[in-house]
Each structure stands twice: as C-alpha cells, then as structure tokens.
Amino acid sequence: MGHVGDMRRRRGSATRLVAATVVSVVLALLVQSGGAVAGSPVTSPDRSGSRELTAHRGTSVTSQFFGLHAPLLGDRFPNAPVGSLDLTTNNVYWPQLETSPGHFDFSRLRGIVSQARGNGAKPLLVLGVTPSFHSKTPGDPYVGASVPKMDAWKTYVRLVATEFRSTIDYQIWPEPNVKNNFTGTAQEMAALVVAAAKIIHNTAPGSTVVAPAMVLRLMSERDFMAKFFRARVDGFPIGHYVDAVGVDPYPLQDGTPEDALKLVTNAQRMLKNEGVTAPVWNLEINYFVPVGGVTPAAPPSPRLSMSYVIRTYVLNAAANVKRVYWLIWGRYFNLGISMVGGDGVTPTLAGTAFSRVHAWLLGQRARGCTQDRRTGVYACKFVKAGHATWIYWVQGGTARVPAPSGARRVQTMYGAVSHLRGGDWIHVTNAPVRVYH
Image (tube, rainbow, N blue to C red; front, side):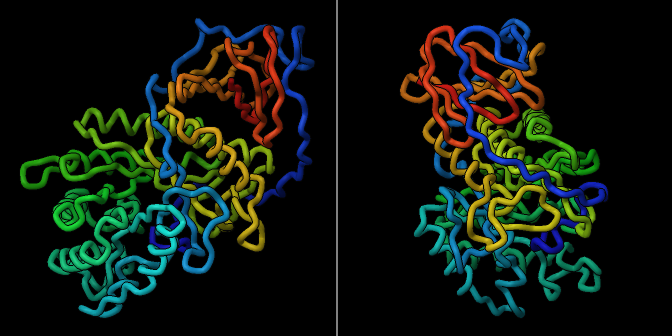
C-alpha cells in the first residue's frame, strides 16, 4: 500500500452504504446466581465438545503488542496506550525521503521517530515504494510499485539504517502480493529483501527486520506469499534473513475477527511447512473493508465495533502473534471501524475498547482459545503471576458459562465490574467479558 488514499483500492467487493445503527450503552449485571438466565440456554458449555482454536501457549503480552497506524503523528499523538506505531500512513516512504536523485531529507521522519519514542512507542518504517528516478521501468503507470535499481535500493537502505539505527524497526515493502503495490515477481522481491536485511543487520543489529506485509484475503495473494517464502537467495530461504513475518489478515467484507484468525493460523501453517521460524506480526487490520478504494464501508454499531477490537487482540495473542497494528487511529471512508470521532482526536467506543483490551492483556501469557461446539462460546485463557483470566463471548445470541474455579469478578467491555460467588453462571453475548480473580 502506498498511502491511505491508494492502499484501499483493492480490498473487497462493492456494497451499498447502510446507516450505522445507534445503540445506547447499557451497563447491566452479567452475573446470575444459580438458575437460568432469561433468554439463554440452561446448559453449560460441553467441555468435551470444545475445539481448540489456538495452541495452549501464545504470546506473552508486552506494550509493543498494541500497535496502531496514526496518520497525525508529528502533530498529535494517539490518546491511547500504544506501544508500537506503523508509519505506513505518515508519508515517509522512499520517494518522500529521497526527493531527487541523491538528495535525502530525513527531517520529518526524525520528528516522528522522536515523538513516538518520547511516548514509549517503537516506530516501524516501511522502506518501499520506488521513486520514479530509481525505477527499472520509469514509464510504468504504477511506478511506485515497480522494481527499483538494486544499487539505488542498497544506498537508500544503508543511509536510513545509518541514520536511525535500532531506534526503529524496518518493514521491507508494503503488500507486494497486491499488483498495485509491486509489479515484480516473488523472486525479485526476495532479492530486495535479502539485500536490505543484510545491510540492516550489519548497521542496526538491535532492530527487527520484518518481511514484506502479505495480504491474506484472496487465494492469489496467498499463492504469492508461498512463492516468496519458497524463494532462495545465496542458497538460503527468505526465512533465514528476516526477524519477523508481516501479514495483513483482512477477512472478506462480512468477515469477523474469528475469520481473520483462520487466515493467520493458515499462514502460520504454511510458514512452518516452509521452515520459517520467525514470529508473525499482524501489520494491518480493520473490518467491513470493501475492495476498490471508492466504495464506503458500512460501519457496524458501536457495540459491535468494540467487540471486534477486543476479540482481535485477544485472538491474536492466543495465536502467538507478537504485534497487532490497528488501521487506523483516525477515520477513513472505507474502513468499517473508526477509533476516533469526527475531530480526529476523541476516542470512540472502539477507541476505548483498545484501551480496555490493553488493560485486560498487558503482562498476561496467552494459554489458548477454544470454542464450545454446542453453545458457540469462545473461551480464551490468560495467566499472570499464577492467576488465571478468562475472556468469553459468542458471535451471536446468548449463552452462559459456569464461573471457573477461583474466579471472583467479571468485567464487561464497558468497564462495569460485578462480583462472583460459587455456583454463579456468567451471561455471555457478543460483547466479550473478562472473568478473573
């Protein structure tokens, strides 16, 4: 993707715009002592009928797990507990850094990096795209997506790495498995990655080299990803050269966080088959995203927006994804979920959900997610200092679960806390709840 204006051109099919339903936020007591909860099944989840969605050992959640794209960096910093920042939307690609052949201007990027680090967030710089004057095919209508001349590429990467060292991390290219972003082959991208990785590892050894972000929505995109990781350069596969693998697991336009999880876990299986051991980073995520770049997304209700944000970070932690960057801390017409209001600053309920899930997960170690086959209840377990936390939800309808042994409190995604007693049942809806000691 180049910038926000052009990186949306290719996701999802057109759909008519529908009005978002305005719902009031009602904080209700979710815990029922004994008996049945009105409107919900009277049976508890069948633990023997649960299916595992993730492995039992997932991410140990640090502040850097909570990433954002923040287009107003340099002016405003997000009003959120963000630990890492993807600079995709900040106009600091190669053509903005090398404004004419041999003339580099890092002043704006310096300010953004300083601001991010001053607020405790690690910046991730996306190195591509190609300036027209360094393209092998300067007449290409998508010249920014064209293959650059290797000598110019190496010079650029070396200067950036020398300037910023390990104060930033480095993503090699934005979504090369989308034609508008890269017109070369998987092998040509592999050559660019290896050249950059060697320079960065030598010049900035404390930084992370992230493989190009790969979109996972379409089969053709997944095929390109597989070809890329099968490519060999200097006798070694690509996994030998990178420290992390980037994915952009946008589901189809009506897809859910659970659908995005399937894309991530399928990609992890493919990487394992190719012998890639580097951890996975989720570099872009949002929902209800159409393809084409001209069709507005149909935004969900505030309640569903909150639910999707929390479920996304919970499921990615369980899947052992090391960072998740939400696109964006802002508003954009074909992104379904907005984390800020019309002023571009004030958090929406989805923005408050980002802070909520940060409070729920920071310092926790993921211990797996399951789904009950009969009730549809998703259950994800986390552990910190010997104490367990459980997060429950269903995609639709209602269900109930018995309070786990030792649990003493339940918190809604809105922040309301209720106390538990032995024998209590917990009412579960599509709004995740946290159950803890």
